[in-house]
Figure 1: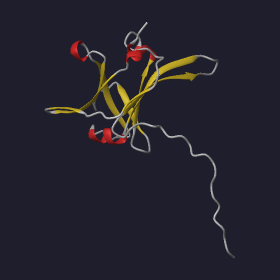
Figure 2: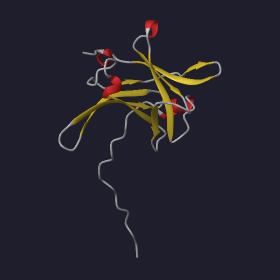
Figure 3: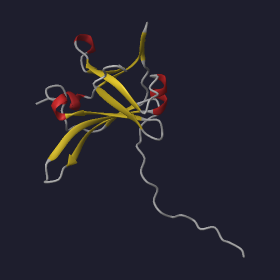
Figure 4: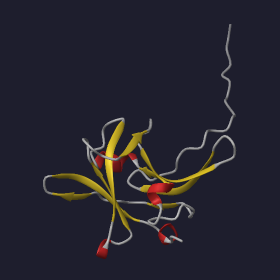
Length: 145
């Protein structure tokens, strides 16, 4: 009995389009039961960049810091296995995602801004410290009311 191959013509699910050596930052909104809106910032780190940062766990504990002075407008994410206050979670493609909620962003970042991508980010390496992710926030993200 011969068989004929069936072609799948359904749409392919959209993938998160983040550069493998880069970062995507987006302001997101979630609608809760009862109609309440929850706003937050979602940061996605590309798989190759995560490997350079030596992020290997399913859930990587990290610390976030906001630059001041000459580093004003920059965000740093560094590994802190024992007491990191944020958690970056790995997906099946090796990308990591962490979020910044509205309370944390209050006074530092706007929650509504256009999504932006940074194509190529090199980890910052210092002696006796794990590599850190450092990137500049966009002007609209820094425009706090």
